[in-house]
Length: 345
Ligand SMILES: NC(=O)c1ccc[n+]([C@@H]2O[C@H](COP(=O)([O-])OP(=O)(O)OC[C@H]3O[C@@H](n4cnc5c(N)ncnc54)[C@H](OP(=O)(O)O)[C@@H]3O)[C@@H](O)[C@H]2O)c1
Image (cartoon, rainbow, N blue to C red):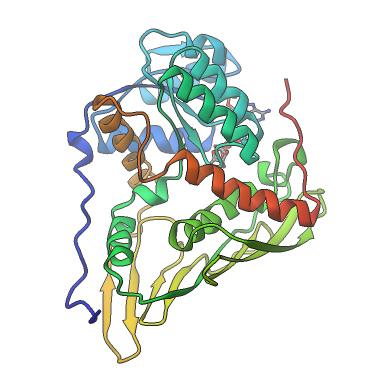
């Protein structure tokens, strides 16, 4: 195909038009605060309740965000009749337990990434949601951003020709006392950060037939930096890297034999990208690189629209895609000997 004259426009519906759901926030940490801010600033979604391990935690969050239902346990939150959907925002190795708690109380769930620590746990959530006719989705917010809808249309258009390679990286430097350095909370780059590069590669080129992984370890006993390469059945390759020891470019690229897409770092948030071909054509997508509060709401609005339409999943992030991404990371972990702790009581 010939190089396009302009980029397609994002088809992302107006977040303010999504029918409001009543959200219950499970866990009151950093991402729960970002998510609630994003909903309150950009949508008509209602945050009606919050659950914390302590009354103090629930009250603090409730005060700050004007949330009326303030529960001193997650069990009380999921039982709240004023809640339609639970947003699970606890550490990774708690997601499985907390999502099942919500589903068994009859609530839809949006579960922070990674949905679970491995593919088997995610399959269990998928089964539970399916049996109950409830909506369950991983909060992989990247794929719901307008920028990614433009990229989606470019992939569908065939502009890349044959896609040979996906390059993606996510590295940040964390202090030794951060949650991500704690083996008890399933720390290390794999679940927290590699989820983005791995999901991106799976989204563009599909599943591996062959995975190779290498890691180096951090002093606290979690993995420090990890590289994964994989090959698909039609011989496309993914080169993925993730680190908690250093900041890295955190860019993403789709390399086809007809065109190249380079997504500015941080590739997984709102921001820009450049499309070029071998003949010097160039198109640039620019938008403000806003932080999480400018993007976490798109996934929630997609969910609200689907639930209002009686649906239990979104094609933008299916449970099959979540499970397949976790399976890539499971295969990598088997090679590097990375295991995760059970959640604390
Ligand atoms: N989408 C994104 O861009 C993004 C960004 C950051 C994090 N995340 C994801 O969100 C999840 C939470 O990350 P976070 O950075 O928000 O973590 P955080 O600030 O440590 O918050 C986690 C919350 O979970 C609850 N919790 C339950 N059991 C806990 C335990 N044993 N230790 C610590 N906290 C416990 C606590 O809330 P209560 O005390 O109120 O119960 C705590 O505030 C992770 O899975 C992470 O991957 C996503």
